Image 1 (cartoon, helix red, strand yellow):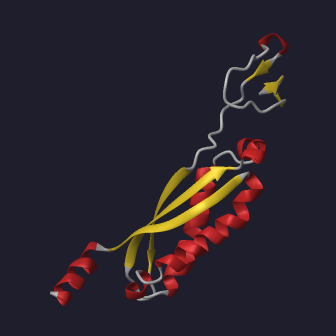
Image 2 (tube, rainbow, N blue to C red):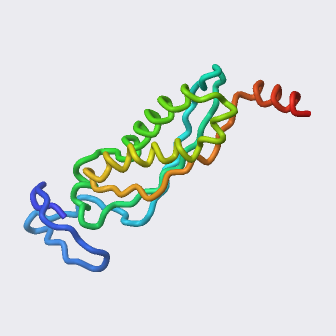
Image 3 (cartoon, rainbow, N blue to C red):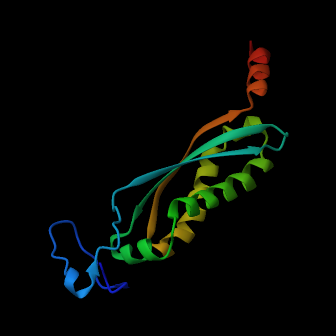
Length: 149
């Protein structure tokens, strides 16, 4: 809650009196549940093939840092998205398309490491990152299927 626009206290779930007569109000709410952010990033591989990569980031707000999670970042999801883009766009251009599928766990670990060093400052704990889908351009997929057929 805030009193006259200044942070005063954090409320746990349940019924709490809010003293509107002295300027107290609820500033907002923060979920402490595990949440998932899906990020789709399109980038080029080392062999100049464009592919769309879907990354899922599972995160939660640290209960002891609810203040930081609410007040330090305006939009934490877009902040995490920017870091995912940064890691994917710096990793994939160094890998050939055939090897991208083999190295998706390494890419996921690199994303978790990057987010894991930055987001705790803002009250967020990164639980897991997964590269859930890698799909090359449609023409490339058709060509690969014709070669394999």
